[in-house]
Amino acid sequence: MNEAAIGIIGGSGLYQIDEMTDVRESHIDTPFGPTSDAITTGILAGKRVAFLPRHGRGHRLNPSEVPYRANIYALKVLGVDRVISVNAVGSLREDIAPMDIVIPDQLIDRTKSRTSTFYERGVVAHVAFAEPFCPGLREVVHIASSQTGATVHFGGTYVVIEGPQFSTKAESELYRSWGADVVGMTALPEAKLAREAEMCYAVVAFVTDYDCWHPEHKSVTTEMILKALMAGVDTARRIVTNSVHDMPTGRSCTCARSLSDAIVTPPDLIPEETRRALEPIAGKYFSKG
Image (cartoon, rainbow, N blue to C red):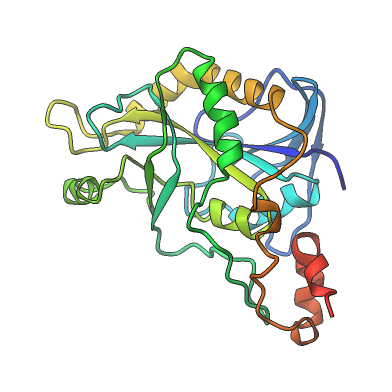
């Protein structure tokens, strides 16, 4: 399918984009089960996009229950090659305040129980992940975020924790000692899977709190996060709309070729069932001699 080239994954608070027109819903069958919710495709800023609420409408899925593989796979089937991910995060730095926006450039993985690869069941691939976010897409969302008048931090390290519980104070201080900038629960394995599907991926991280390390601020609570997100949801929609409007047509980054030297299993040794399942994301490599 070529329903949309741009995908938007909405985080906590962003469950729909009202500005989309010519809207229709898609239910994609995947080898990895159902997606978080129906994927909505429509026209935004003159381009067809695909929108998926990460936690499902009504926020029914906790961060570890999100079917990350199904979500990325389904977006790929629809033709998406760029993904803008909206995330809620806590700040680990004094100068990154609640209601600021961070466009991170690095990740630290502290998740424990999430499957983070498509390549198993008879096929092995090792994609490069030194730079986990697409530099070109990061630049697009940075400019789009700055256009809203919000305080935007370009660059930063995002620690992804398992959740659904928030960090202990000891953990929060540990992440600060590592030089991390924000902490959240949902950028991984999403970013890894997007890279494995040769999709560009960037995060727009909305800061809702100071986690639990700041002596002059209350420790993070769900109420605190939701209140901040409701205040920032209009900004999130404007960032997404601006990003789509300014998105270049072609891709010059290496994201589109991330599998070119990553699959180590010879094509003739890959089980037929695995080949069929992964055809939408890696089929062109399976047919190589």
